[in-house]
Image 1 (tube, rainbow, N blue to C red):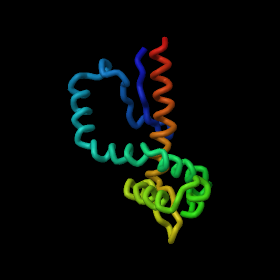
Image 2: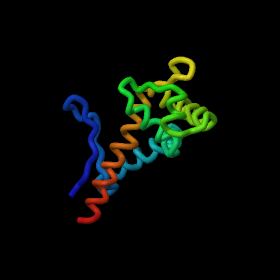
Image 3: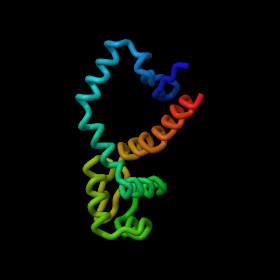
Length: 137
């Protein structure tokens, strides 16, 4: 069985990638690996932002808000964090493009942050589950 990943918008397939290296034409696989190497810093920045439990919890908390906005004090109270931890992690989330400061002490999840969080938490989880299920067949 050949497994492929597709990105679809309004019924149109934007791209499709095989999930096994043997399903790629050799030259195309090499081109993709070279492109990934070129963009490695950009990708690692996203993973660094969300690979920390506190930042993950902060993003999860933001995604629970209808307007994707929360203030500094709510982060402290809702996640039981001290001000220094909240400050350090909001700074990292802002540097990673996941958070925007909308006013003093108030933060909003950026569009990039929302999509990045969904991709890395939901889509990756489902993808890994599907791969593990295939392995068990």
